[in-house]
Length: 273
Image (cartoon, rainbow, N blue to C red; front, side, top):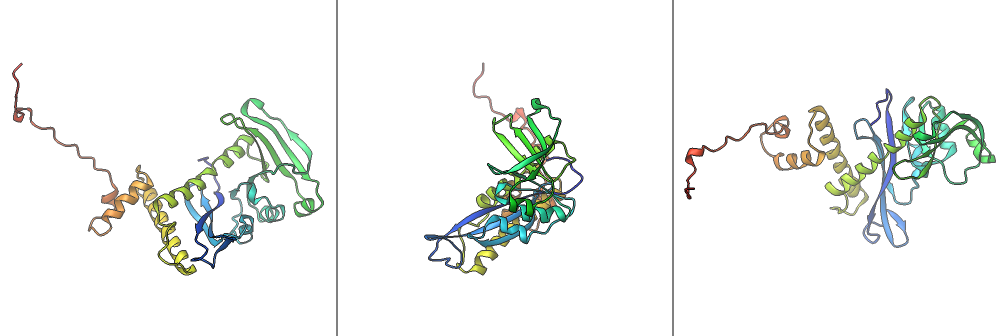
């Protein structure tokens, strides 16, 4: 994770599929139901700072209307959240965003900064939007960075309202967004949010919040105790020792005792060479 003096958040959503006949309060498509878990993950601690549970029909970008915005913080999002009116509101609130541009974005170049193509940065520009509604929704300059990923060979176009950080830092910020994907993968694999004990909206949301709370508590314990063990290892240890009268600090600390080797004199010799 990049060492910045400000908060860095990754925003994304994941879908949990449900049976339409049992969960008719969460319509998604004509033949299935689903809920969405909209998450703002603090990339410094890997702990969610904001979670909103909705039905599957709510578009991801609508969460920007209820998202708490912290002045000076960075919000990293994929291009599904590219809404210039909402991004401009975030800009006016004093926050920074990093996202990807959509293909065919209509914009004119205002200024081009120097770049080192050997680093992967093809261009670093200040642009203004050309479309009538786009320019009305975002009337200020945007920074457009075209970057060729040396690992995959793909060319990515980033948009941000931050004009001070190096272009490579902006690219690294977007790359760090994968942590929220790992968060979704972890809770789906290790916590019970795929099979539900009840079918009502309250039952489903209660089970999800219990799962998220479990993750947050384990992440806090791991951070406070400076443990090298993975979150999954901590979860397994706590799950089998939750009813034992053992302090959490003792249960999660690694066993540093070394077993005493057996006395060679006590070993029987069956063959004499």
